[in-house]
Amino acid sequence: MSLSGWGRFPVLDCMVAEVDTREQASRPIPILPSIARGNGRSYGDSSMAPAYTLDTRRLDRMLAFDEASGALTCESGTLLSDIIELFVPRGWFPPVNPGTKFVTLGGMIASDVHGKNHHMAGSFCDHVTSFDLSLGDGTVLHCSRTEHPDLFAATCGGMGLTGILLSTTFKLIPIATSRIEQKTERAPNLESAMALFEASLGCTYSVAWIDCLATGPDLGRSILMLGEHATEEQLRERDRATPFKCPRFKTKRLPIDFPQFVLNNSSVRLFNSLYYRLHKPSATLVDLESYFYPLDALLEWNRIYGKRGFVQYQCVLPLDASRSGLAELLFEIAREGNASFLAVLKRLGRGSFGFLSFPMEGYTLALDFPAKSETFDLLNRLDAIVAAHGGRLYLAKDSRTSARLVEATYPQLATFREIRGRYGLDQRFRSAQSARLEL
Image (cartoon, rainbow, N blue to C red):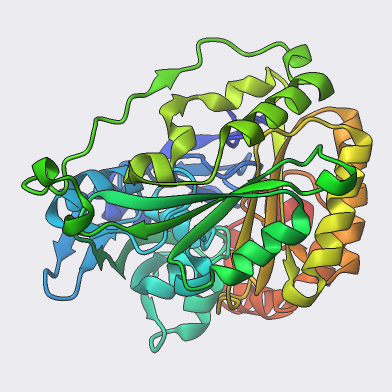
């Protein structure tokens, strides 16, 4: 069948098999090379193997929960949305949340996802204690920081290239309510946005929408949204009896693919200007869904970019190079005028332990661009800026960069390759992305 990532680019013809049980996923793989696929929410070609793609969404059972520690054990195909629906009413919440709840636990580990609290909590795999991994030849290993630690570190952020995740244990965090105390700040330019981030390092959550088409003195103007888990005392008196009751998250479905001319320099520039002016400094209580997963309110929002799809470009720059690097990136994007209205800036904390994990201490910028020829010319120029400033690209978002850039910007890639070769995983697991990037 035809498969794509969330960006709908590229689209590949793949042989797909459903994995129904742990026992089935533990057997030798009949067709090689292969890759496991969860809910297909990585953006590019990382969860597709033309020869054999294993759909793991039926491995979705929750197996055990420890009320004392918050340790939860689930099969790898379990959706984050199901965990939230079951455990938030009990006063528990995932320790790290990506921008969508429609991801599987296996995908979260393979991408070592980070969230709005990376500067304080690290990435998701920092909260994973162990997992069971099928190596594709009938071998299943229990991996942790003390058991097969090489495979543990290679799998965390390893884009599914070390085997099939069967189940995992990680720790939820306790919360007192299902609300977030959100503070909104406006930053008139990049320098003030970064100053607000640095002044807010003690806040649990922080994220900014950034206007990537603003120029001159407005370059990098942003809306910063800080967040803290609200206490019962912060709720209105009538809500304190039901602290975990939230308004039902209303979703709408985008019914058609937008024509490509809808998103152009003028329309996005107008949207960005209105968005910035409408978001004034404020403090309010919002529900978890709207703070962490705002785009999930519009199902199939990826159709906004039309049938050709789009590419998401996410980079991270080290802290000491972030100011100059971000300014160069934003200047180049604004100069090109290539429309991206979904632009996000975050402050990341210390780097992760996974050999191919994306985060490093600094700033990460994520942007969406329509998949067309001029886009790829622009992104090649952005690659050069990122490399010159010591940064790297996020493999979970990538669909088009070069093997040379990844080789130069992931310093532990050689160790990752050695571990894959030692266990024979390089012969059994390969995605379209890993072939393209020579991982």
